[in-house]
Length: 205
Figure 1 (cartoon, rainbow, N blue to C red):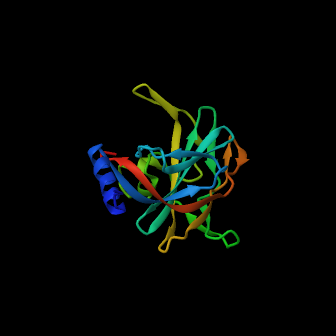
Figure 2 (figure 1 turned 180 degrees about the vertical axis):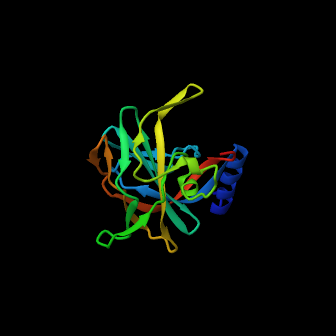
Figure 3 (figure 1 turned 120 degrees about the vertical axis):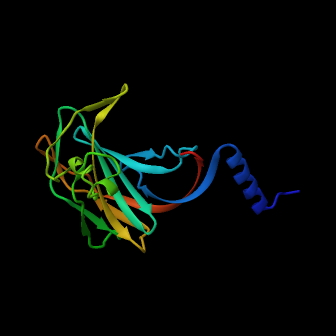
């Protein structure tokens, strides 16, 4: 005898909970294929949730995330700058469009954050965070960070609110231009679509 759909769904939830994970229905932003290398969330069991897109440009990498929190959408960018390169942003403006032929509007980000969580830390007024907020046109000299045997290229972040309720289904994001060792560079506009995603996430993630 076939199991009714609701009972089947409830069984899946029960099994997932017993296995230490829980199914979640999330709203996520997915970049168009070919705009960079997708980076998936570590907080899923099936590697199914796009968390960012990694875009290489002139020897460094930009990891661009478009996220939603409640009724707001915001963009975060992490620049990975290796030794021998110096990154400097041209300005503090991110362009946002909600339709392919629509007019772009500009949003500002206040600074470059030297710590993660820029949508919080770039806007913080805490004296403890202030030393890690640097002006937008500061030369960001590359390097390597080594902690307990792990090593990575120097990180720096920017972030800005790009949309509020009602959040559109599509967004085009154009990041500010910049120079790498005084050579101009730019990342083409990134196109994101909103998606509903059913994921299995560990309970303690």
